[in-house]
Image 1 (spheres, helix red, strand yellow):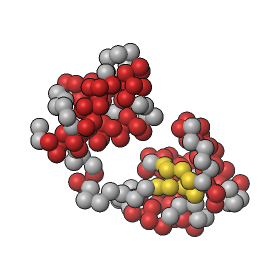
Image 2 (cartoon, one colour):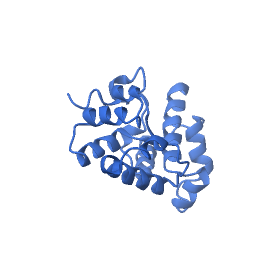
Image 3 (cartoon, rainbow, N blue to C red):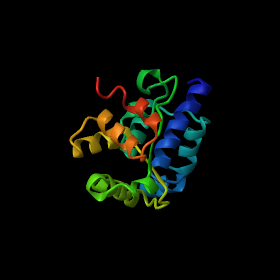
Image 4 (cartoon, one colour):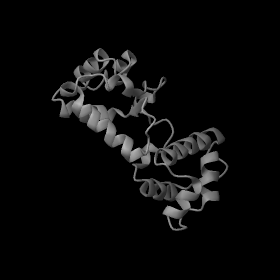
Length: 166
């Protein structure tokens, strides 16, 4: 495994771990010692090669498909990462309840699950936007336009959903 590949793999491992709110020691505790903090840390730094078997076991532990951990597996090779979908919670609070109620409840649920109560912005995933589109009975691109018109989502978000309605 090349050094650069190992570092990219490690970056993906670290991203998944931190998205789940786990420290290295948290991984060791949650796995009841199966995954040692020092070993996972060395994988994340690219200092230690991880076997395919161990990578599959780590993916299973994190509850993600193995391909999510592999470098270069972002859609289309991703020369440019998709824009982040960030809800402006301060503006959302000023949208009439009859329009924004489902979105406000959904955002509150995500905040609760993450323990993230900064109250200003909230990052959501494309899957969240697709779920919201089902709730609002609209396509993701139509909902995106609506959220942009409310001032809740940045106009750059259009790029994130452009391929969803193909």
